[in-house]
Structure formats: structure tokens, C-alpha cells
Amino acid sequence: MTTGRLSTMRDCRSYVRSLRLDPYSSAHELCDQISTARGRPIRVIEARLPVPGPMGVWVCRTDDDVVIVQDLAVGAHRDHIVLHELAHILCEREGERYRHDEPALSALEGILPEGGGAVVRFRSVHDSAAEREAELLAAAFAEFAVDDRAEAKVSRDVQRYFGGA
Image (tube, rainbow, N blue to C red):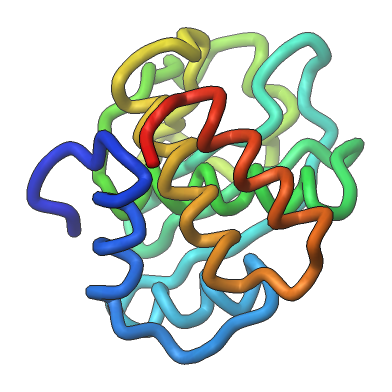
């Protein structure tokens, strides 16, 4: 859905404003709005993912997208993981692809269709341009939903870490 890389917080804020979203107070509400706008469902589920390993995974299935969140994550951290994966979906960036016989996929049993039909996307390299973009866009989404000063501070910390104003 984006036309180019979102490399600064300014770019990300402009992109979020361009979506003309209704007010939302949670990552789930935002996913519902984006699902409706795209005409493609986004499901968010919790699963016990391997530790160490990814905290969130995007599964692109034939008829929907699934965001899998580490079930050990809670609160603002959990929401940020969802927003991060949502950013990858909207930016349509390719992550690494697991083969369907990959042992680490055992945590996703029942989510992946039998015999394929889904692409599992995750990231093991966290300093790539796609990861930076997803972190900044997730922080921008959080800013537009924030009522809580503590979460606003998390957003500013992410912004400072990755640079950009």
C-alpha cells in the first residue's frame, strides 16, 4: 500500500494521516480498520513462539493475513509487535521465507494450511531498511492512538533510537 520507503518519522506520520483512519485506541481496532480498507482480513493470534526467536510473525495466507504474537508479550510491548507486523503488511515488504518443513514452524501448527498455500514472513536481521521502516511506522501508529504518557515515551524512544524527527 505504500509507494516507497518510509525512512523518517515525518514520512510515517504523513503516511498514517493519508490513511484517513477513524480514531482507534488499540492495535486490534487499527487492524480491523486496515482489514476493511484493504478488503482482506488481518487476524491477530497469540502463540508460544520459540525463545530466542521472533516476537511476531506475519503469515500471508491465500485469503487473509495472520499476525502471530509471542504469547509471553503483554501490554504495550504486545501492541507494538502487532503494529510492527501490520507495518510490514502495509509496506508489502518481503521477509525471509520459511520452508513448510522448517522445524521452527511447529509453533504455527494449525495456522498454516496443509500442503502450503501460505508464506511465513519473519525477520532475523533487525538492522535492515525494512525493519527500520516497520519500527518507525509502528511508532507513528502508536502516536496516533496514544492517550497514555508512558506509551508516548516508548514511541519517542523508538524514534530517537532509529533517528528521524
